[in-house]
Image (tube, rainbow, N blue to C red):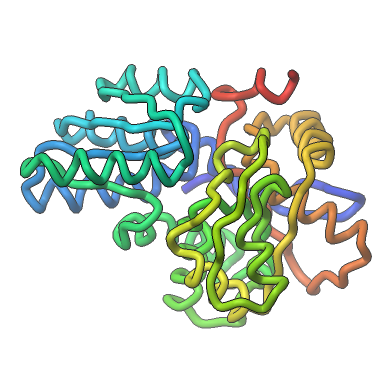
Length: 300
């Protein structure tokens, strides 16, 4: 269980869920632990992963613990520190030029060609989400057996968000509003939500410090939109200046997180600045990844 600690943003009290303190430094450990255990029980000896960093490190770590081989396919622009972590756990790493979707397709082809391998995608495998839902189950326990009023979280592939809604379905309400934050440079979920569409459409991603959320065509878009709408939540698109400013504010509270992890906090600040009415009760902001992996990137 990761800590839930009090803090402050824009003059308002908030609670920070410190998932960057998990063993490999990100919330992806939750899904990786469950998915690797499941695939090992299915008899696979090798896992093929596509990731922009944190999932690669998490899956490589749990593969090492389970004595499984791990082959990571990553975008060529992935943070070197994250890939160094995956290599340290013994994973083979292949860098792929092109879009995030091209990287995924390359990994899928490699897994299909190897009968001993499973494609362990954190972006679509349903078992991964069974692990990520535990963050909100923990919050429910830490608040004495009830949910907060709202949760602000970064969204890329959607496992954190979909996991949250799975947790809501597992326990009695009232449920929190789920607020999804994406970088303005790559915000397919925001675009679809604001247009009232049932599913996301691919966008042309621009450069962003929030590399973990730079997914132009998330495969679980329909599920993400449903989770936001059913929880009466909303979406926020965060520009780069706001992201960096929020990142520095978190650091000054002793919370050294990576840029992607600051999206939820930036969404809270943006909602307050726009005068959006906040639900009464606790606001929980999930801090998903450690700044030790990409901290220097935010200073450039």
